[in-house]
Length: 285
Ligand code: AMP
Image 1 (cartoon, helix red, strand yellow):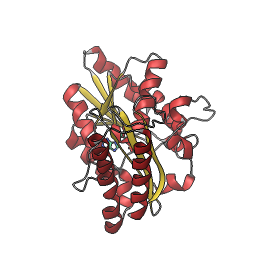
Image 2 (cartoon, rainbow, N blue to C red):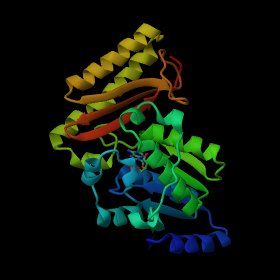
Image 3 (tube, helix red, strand yellow):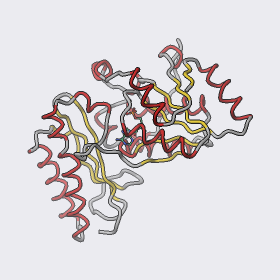
Image 4 (cartoon, rainbow, N blue to C red):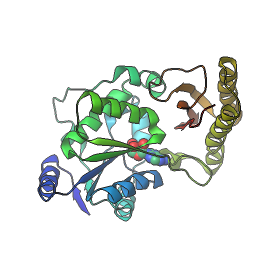
């Protein structure tokens, strides 16, 4: 496994490989790898000759400096996990390499970035879209892999790729969960065992909501009732609810009916740790 810290060295290596006809898969991450990241790496390794994993804790997508400072960092473990999962190249640039003095261009995907996580985290998705575009330009992969846990992020990246005519294929991969159902997240390392037990209710309650939605024909009143019930139950299990949203899975606009293609998404705090999760309703209600 090769490790690069500079854009020039990485580009040179990837260009040599492209000349040999090798395909390139790319997995962007902020490090502190877990099984969710590993699944993306494995899928990329399966579908491409080379898999580039970037590890860069991007300061511009944190709206609060404290959250950035508290974000877990675990570089030694990351190298081992990445190698085991099948990464062939690690790109771990410094902040200065990515944002040299005088940097000022940003990418905005305004409509998709407005609801849900965008509402309470101003600038988050601009920071995310900007770094993803920069990384896609640096790596020029054939395919890039993103997790559906960050559903809104995937929608924004796909829209940006369409709007700006990038050639990379964006592949959305299913959410990987711990045995309890809790979605794997770097932030889980900050939960105590008791908080983790509480957090496992997120997915259980989401599933109950989906089951209720799929059993009934869901009218406006019933959808509102399910929304309120989910919000109440998350709070009853000791979570501070940031949002519960029932939205169209493509436009992310609110839906007052639940049917196939509807997304149920939540963001909660357990103590100071912010967790998100979602389920997409598949069949017809
Ligand atoms: P992050 O390091 O949190 O920025 O995540 C890097 C990539 O891993 C993003 O595309 C995430 O959506 C994806 N990811 C994070 N958690 C999971 C998970 N539990 N299952 C699948 N993908 C995930």
